[in-house]
Length: 186
Image (tube, rainbow, N blue to C red; front, side, top):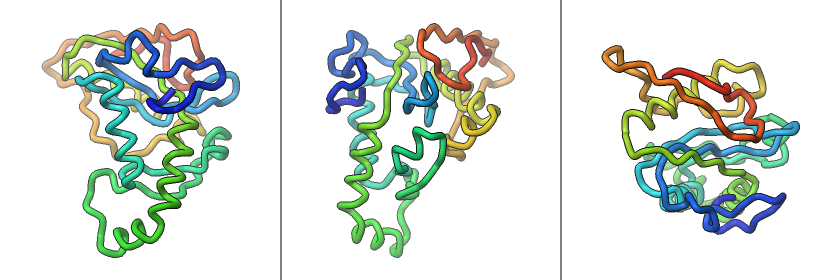
């Protein structure tokens, strides 16, 4: 579960996880058809707990797109707020955000609460983490609907350079993470 969110459905709170203070790859998912639909993959050299707390603030400040959680669990993107993704808001969008701040922050809290976070502790090697993140997102983009329609497009992804050796990544998670191959190369 996301930091600060009470555990539900037998999920472990990130704060209680033995890997909370490690770095690696993380997935934001929602329950979907006997498994989990992946909204996004991320990577961090900092601890998972630190990075997700940063994401909490970013959600509350309109950085990320916010969805109707019930629709997202059905595999449908129904936006409540379209994120700025680090871009400076136009004066019109900034005014809209300020006018809707409470609504947006409630939506952010609902979204964060609805996410199930999966973490994969890995060595703190920037290029490897970036390549794995890109490989996961590329798998989602290439998947059939709804798996390809839920993730945001336009992420800054860093795929394998021609000068780098191929690395095989194995998904060892026992849960069904839809559209994530059991094994893939980056």
